[in-house]
View 1 (tube, rainbow, N blue to C red):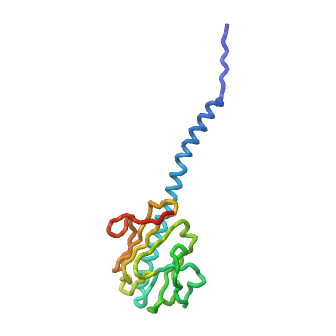
View 2 (spheres, rainbow, N blue to C red; view 1 turned 180 degrees about the horizontal axis):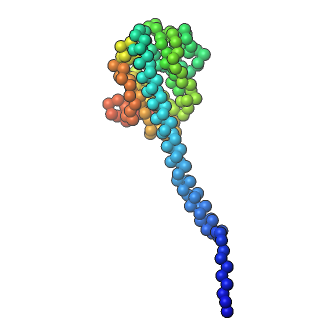
Length: 188
């Protein structure tokens, strides 16, 4: 008696189901971690963009050799234009701008140099401490006082970045509050 073996190609239904189950488990574990990575990356990018704008404002103040350059909140682009008074009561989450200003109080905007809209700050909570709602840089590169901006992701309240400006005008990004303490992010 001769045995004939037919060779079968393909996969059985059970093999396909096991493969799909393994794939679903891997996706269930990987997608939340990827979303967390994206949130952290966006927050770090926002902090670095703000750092760059503050450094730009400082270098512009030095380059101009006279007057001041300010960085501050500006929620309404129509109000934050050349030759306008800087609106009071603005929130950083609504956007901010870099502008040359005069010495009046509130300062008059002489020229808008850069503007960041609220869309670029989506899902980020921004809190500034210090005596002024804005950062001022003088022609010698010094700042108008030390202050810290804390940036937090609303989805990850335990993760934040601090953009710190000291009185001599040095700007840096840190994972910790000035003095080494933990950043205080508001609850979501």
